[in-house]
Picture 1 (cartoon, rainbow, N blue to C red):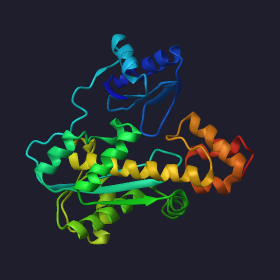
Picture 2: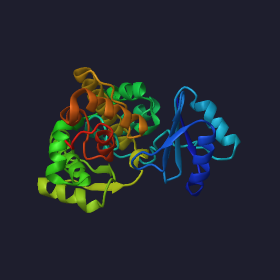
Picture 3: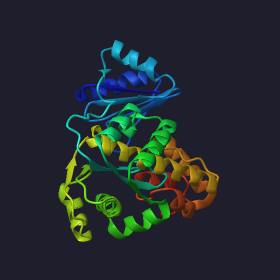
Picture 4: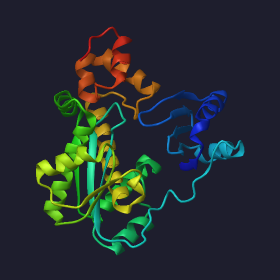
Length: 301
């Protein structure tokens, strides 16, 4: 269950205190004001004023927050707008803020208005608003109906690339440019909308270096566009599949995100296989690595 609420970012500390009184473990996640969880429900608050409530008790706790006037329901976030739809491609990423698992980028071309309507009617929307199981199903629908491309860097390749490049946004831009180049080569010319993740020039340079000939627009919160929402779902499904494959291959538990439960799991990974195993399953430039190794007495990978 996922519920989207709106809250006042300037009241974040008030919200934090309320959640602690309610028995939540309150921490942080990349790109979020706060992250809190207790059995049955978790909350992620963003500076944009969006508050995501997830878990079996999400609906119940959304009512608690609304009743205490700490948040109100977001009625329009779930369905992408289709006014004046024109065929175009969208691109988005998943795994950027997750310590464990791959970094994934997807590009999707929505070829016509009928396909766009079908995707929206079936529930295609921003992957952050979708439970894991539903994300996989919706991504399958997108793949069946739309030309698409996915790029993924598993942790060993990610760590090598990050150490070579030294900047996550440059690495992301390279993956976005590669995905768009492949998609447009397969599907033909199209305008493109990308969920903006850095200064526009970072991606523009990568596209120019690859010789990508397309009108590429970048915008924040672009998941409200059906093509970007579709891409976000494909990227999310790729990330979840990659994370699950790592768990099976190495026999370790790898939670999503970068909160306290992730630090605990990272310490368990280090205890089991040392820093080399950590490089196989995690993005080791995260501060989580220092916390995990500091608790184990290990050396940096």
